[in-house]
Structure formats: C-alpha cells, structure tokens
Length: 380
Image 1 (cartoon, rainbow, N blue to C red):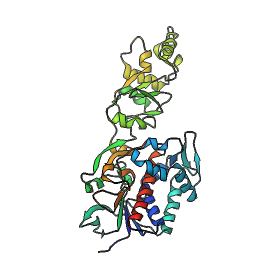
Image 2 (cartoon, rainbow, N blue to C red):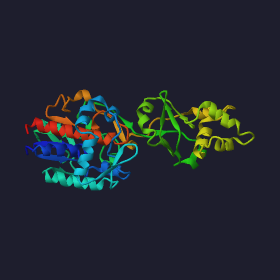
Image 3 (spheres, rainbow, N blue to C red):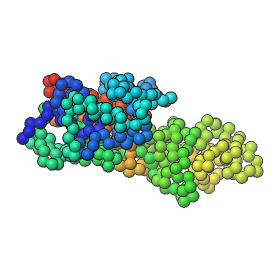
Image 4 (spheres, rainbow, N blue to C red):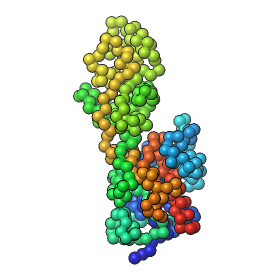
C-alpha cells in the first residue's frame, strides 16, 4: 500500500484549496482529491454573478457563529483582499462593502490560484470519490487506499449536487453530523393563476416583516414562490416556521398610508393604489393575492400583508446549507475529536452565513486554519 502524501485533502473547493495552500506553504507535501473532473466548480458558478468574495462592513464576525471568530481574526476581509491581489487579481469595493475582483468573474482568480498551488508542489487528483476509512486508511471508489500523516476534509455542503456538493460524505461520519437544511434559499408560494404574468418581477422598496423586525431588501416573484437577496438572510427564521409579512410602504406610517388612500376620491381601487401610494403592478398583485376579500380600510393590509409560505425550496436549489459536521465533534484546531490527525474545513461544518461575502470568506478562513493545524500536526 502506498503510504501516501504527508497531508491528504478531500475536496477541491475554496476551503480545500486554501487548506492546501496553507499546508504547502509550511513545507508539507499535499495531495488534493476531488470526485469531480475539475476543481472549484461552485466557485466558478458563483463567479458568473460577480464573485462577491468578502465584505468590508464593520462587525464581520458577528454575522458568523462564535466558533469561527478566531479564524476570521486570523484570515478575515483584509487578508482575503491581500491574498487576491497577491494572485494578480485587483479588487473593488461596492457601496455596501461587498468586495469583488475587477474581472467580475472567478476563472482568472482560479487559474492564478491553481498555478500557485502547482508551484508549491500541490498535486490535484480528479475523479476520486472518497468512500470513508478502512483499517485506518482513506479509501476511494477506484480502490485507492492511502495512509497520510494528516487528513483535511473539505467536502462541502449538500446543495448544487451537479457542482460537486452532494453531502454523501456525512455517511462516513455517523453520529457527528446535524441534518442538512437549505440556507440562502427561496420559499414556495402556491400562487393563483393570475400571478403568472408577474413571474420574474422584482418587489422593490418593501419591508420584510419577520420576528417583530422590519428587514429591507429586494425579492423576486418566481414561478415557484419568492426568492432573492432580501429573503436569504431571513431563511433560518422562515425555515423554522416564522411567519412572513410584507410592508408595501415601509417609509410611510399607517396614518400616512390611510390619508393617501382617502385622497383618491372616486378613483378605482387600482388607480388609488397606483396614484396615491405609487405601488408597482407586482405590489398591487400581491395585495390582491393575499388580501382578498379586501377590507374597506386597506391601510393596515398595505403595512402588514401576510404571505403564506409553503416551506423552503429543495435543498439542492439552495445557495448553501446549514447542518453538517457539528462543532462539538471537532476541537479548536478543527480536528475531529474521535479521529486524531483528521481536520475539517469549509461548508461541511455546521454553520451558515448570509450572502454578501461572509460565506466564501469563512470557507477560506477555515481552510487556512485547518491547513496550518494539519501542518503543525505533522511537525512542519
């Protein structure tokens, strides 16, 4: 049996590649194994919409679980930006603090990154599906068995199976994982036929009422329900059954809405909503969809329109997942408590983050942390 490399990494997504870089920079021999034919497919897909890598907004760590705080302190937004620029990828920061590569796509970054890893001696093994352990050896579907000095698992979550994150690894860690759940995901709504003409319409300048607080953000009416960046940060609460309501005029008080509607005189209701409140057609449609039969006093409904959700969209459609390897199953080095020398990183850990740069930065930070810890373990 081939004794294998000093450090084996399972998973060639952002966390796995960053773990490889961190360990190889400490002089370790590193081999990365991935079951897909090419690495970082989910990263490349994210890059099609601009690749929001990190965020310079204050309180970055507060958006993430406390267990990740030391990792973000060691490799947070400033370090991510420096790392990207070190790969020859200049960045720019948007008005909300979101940071993007100037190229606005992932492929140039990934090419430069893979070239750096190659220069560090990292070897990438494709089409190698990990199937667990046997007699202490890492086993792969093609029959390969290796005994590395340390292992880093960076196997991803359980969404976007076609890009490589299928969650099948959880079967190899029985008793150590929490059930997967969709995060940053849309929610199902059973629409009546008249909503069909509004599919694809954005609902702007509305408040999302969840848990007694008003959240601002754009959502989109789709064939299957509601989706969009305004909804994604609320997915944990909505997934747990919290009700959703819309405030169609969040910048007006109830009294102001009532007064505006009263000025409409003999105008038809659609005209009053359009002229007096300047509601967009999709907002009027939502009011009709969820408010019928409409009351005489429409103002309370405009300010608090209940939206009956029918649950989240399927796990495989989610941008990311909650659940996975529990933090009580690893120590502060991200090493599995019941398997010394095996570390974990990235989205396979049981945490979730909103979109906006937090998710990818935390994957990179945990990769750095696990890579350095594994290098320390093998004595480099």
